[in-house]
Structure formats: structure tokens, C-alpha cells
View 1 (cartoon, rainbow, N blue to C red):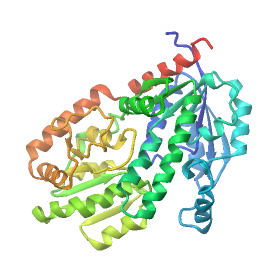
View 2 (tube, rainbow, N blue to C red):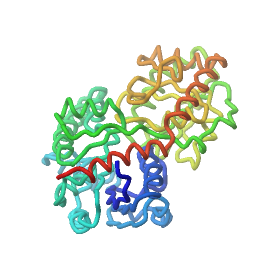
View 3 (cartoon, rainbow, N blue to C red):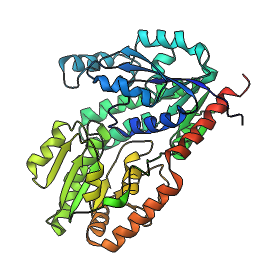
Length: 409
């Protein structure tokens, strides 16, 4: 395959800094590698609330930037609830409709012809790309998740009837939009083989190129400073994302009490940005639960944790925090959904459990058995070290780009 220099227009709905979500980290590390060999123009919304550093640091991952001003409506505000009510009469799910922008569509239409390839990073920018593109065959959709699946799982696990109704409505709308939008691109790349199969099966797509695995910075995340504290369990993730909120509340109510009944000195730390009130309330109710909010560096928490838990019941794509913990030498317990799409093996480099009792039992094993914890951590580090560096991941993604630019249209 001819490894020519490419000019790539990269579409996003926000700046990458601060690097506080798995999706941002995946894009940032891949773009840093791609930008060494290609010309990347980063076209994105820019929120006025972001610090100037978010714009300045964009030079770390792109050679050119173009920003469209956009402000997200604060959750819980009067305007937010008005938008939710208005959205009830739309064909689009709210998570897509809120990104509609005539100015962004105009920018895409104006700039697209200058580039060899347009890449839509996540599904959300596609709502503007669909209205603007004149050359869809020279485009690639980078799907970090099967987005509709997240909402289906939220609907399936919702206890409140009103929430279940609303999540089901959003799931059905998102499924329809995701199917339509994905079919318009020249190619679709997912982050796991399972996501590829789901999109082919459920949407009948014939333009799926394949998957690109989640990577990890194996030099940044290292097990050199591990000093685990007895009984410390952590969860790491953005705490304004509904699947993470559900996971933490589920762990605290259904699993953690089973652990505490057998290990009273256990502690649970929720490490992640923007914890919602229902998550902050966990710490007020139980002093052994710590809610940190935003931390500049998650590694010190991983170093002192005996185990990291991933009790996800909803979600999609792959979980970058699992590979980061593995690289850091922190053993992981996850649900099957939490580790879905990752190249992991139960009882070898991770422990998997799907009921509260089994999850508590697996966590207690790692808390109490140093030999098992060290074996799991050692095998996990070896797995990511050999297979999931960002350089290797970016090369796989780069080959998908060439499949678009070098084929005959």
C-alpha cells in the first residue's frame, strides 16, 4: 500500500484538552501519531468556557485548527429542560440534535474539497457533515461506540418508569439516525470487532472496514511506583456520563455492602471529573466512600489501589481506563459489558463477574490474595505492553485511511 502524505479534515464536537475522558485520550494519542506523517486540520466546536490552553495545546495533535463557537446548555437549567421538551417532537435524539449547527455545516462544505479525506470522530459531528458533504465517498466515520446500544442498555436497566420510557424513545431515535448516518460514509471504523459485528448485523452496513483497538501509553503508565493500600478499591471514569453514574451507584448499593460485610475496613474511591449530586451523596451517606472529582493525574490513585472495579451495566466501545490500569499494574474486576471488546481473558489478566455476589467475591479475592493480584497484574501489563501501544494502533487506523483515499470512485 502506498504510504503517501495525506491531508485530513478531522471533525469533532469539542477541543481535546483537558484530557479527561477516554474518548479524548484515544483521539489525542492517535492524532499525535498521525500528525507526524500527515497534515491534520482539526475542525471543531469551541466552548467559551474552555481555557485558552485548550486551543494552544491543539498544536500538539494537529497542524491547523478551525473553531466554531458553540455553547452546551447546562444540564438542569431551565433552558435544558425546555430543549428536552422541544426535542420530544423531533425525529432526532437529543444527544445528536443539540450539536446541529448551520455554521459548522457551512465550514465543512467550504473546507472539504481542500482535503484528501474527511474523518468524523464519534457519531455526533455527522449531523452537520450530512448536510454539507459533496463527496461522501472520501469520508470515514470513527465510531468509538455503537451509540444506540448505550441507550438501549440504559433503558433496560432503568427502574423508574418515566426514565425507561424516555431512554427507550432516545434509543429508537438514535438507532435510526446511527443506521442512516453510518451508511452514508465511505467507510466506518469501530473500536472493537464486536462493535463491527453489531453494526453489520443490526444496521445491515456494508461499509465497515474493521476495528482499531484501544491503545495505552505504556511509558506513561508503568507499575514502578505501586504501593497498594489495604482495602482500597477505585473506580476511574468521567462522572457526568450516565453509564458511569449507573455503574458507581450500582456498585455502592448492590456490591460494596457485600464486600464490607466480610472486609469492614474496605474503602471505595470514585475518581473522575464532574461527579453529579447523586454520586457526591454516596460519600455523605458512607464515609468509607471517597468522591474525588477531577484529578490531574490518575496514576497515584491506581498505584495505591488494591483493585480497580468496572461494574458497568451499560456502555459501548472499549474502555481505555482498563488498559491504563493494566499498564499501571493495578488488577481489575469488571462486568462482561465493562470489558466488552477488549482482548482480555478471565482469570488470566482480569477477573470478570456479572452478578453482585460474584462481583463482590472476585473483588475480595484480589483484596485478600496478594499472589493472585500480582499474577493478574503481571499478565495484564504483559498483554498491553506487547499489543497496544499507540504507535501500533495509529498505524492500523492509518491503513483504513488509505483504503478510502486510494480506491477508485
